[in-house]
Length: 135
Image (tube, rainbow, N blue to C red):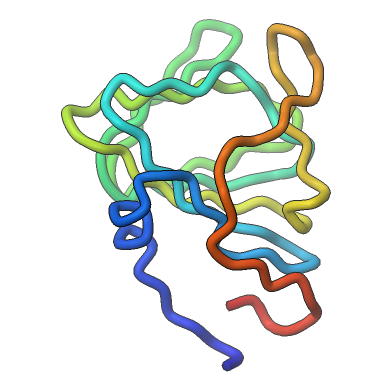
C-alpha cells in the first residue's frame, strides 16, 4: 500500500518504548514514550530533525542554560549539530513523534559530555528501507 495511516500515540502507549515507525532512504521517524521524570542526556544528531509532542509535557534544555517547555500540539525544529536535553516534566507519560532526514542507518547520536557517538536506544517496529513511498 502506498499510504498507511498509523495510530502513533497508540503504538507508544501499547509498547511503552521508543519505536521506529518509518525508515526510508530519505527520512526516518519514531515515537517516543517516557515516564514522568525520565531524562535524555544532552546530545545532538548529525541530521536535522523535528519533534511533535502528542501527549504530556517535555522540557528541552540547551547548553547555554536556555529552556523550552513543550506540550501537546507543539513542535520543534532542531538543526543537525544542535545540542539539547529532554526531560518529561509532566505528571503523566510523554509521547512525541520525531523525524530525521536520511535513513536511520545514517543517524549519529553525539554525547555532549564526551563528544562521542553513542548508539540510540529503542527498537524497530517497522523497517521500510526501499525506494517505495514512505508509509
